Image (spheres, rainbow, N blue to C red):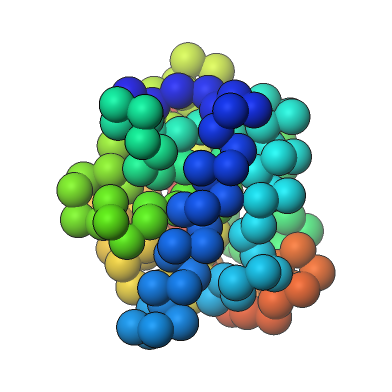
Length: 172
């Protein structure tokens, strides 16, 4: 079940961030996230406080999380979007995290499909997502779910991590 996260979920979401990043440190990975830098439990706390964190809860176990809001980073202005929309009509998905033990179970697709349904119900016209340009699994997931790559641009993630991002969009 995908639902709005509560204060009781914050610690579990923080654990999933750490599990993913520790796994990537040992095994290599595709994100550009850095353990202890981004994402952290503070990101989860802020998103829960703002009512923008959603989790996939499988019998009390948090198997995935994401943040959904209308906040587009400054870099979004540099992208030549095929589907222009007013800012309040754009749902932006941030920090979609699937910990290693939950990988390859279809949870990523479930989260993206939930975002599509949420966006429709919220009256949005477009969904936008950015991901590290070299994150092949994430780009593949989004493209399989109907998103198109709108462009690439360099960004400073939360003012901390320099990266090249791929920007994707989906027309509702």
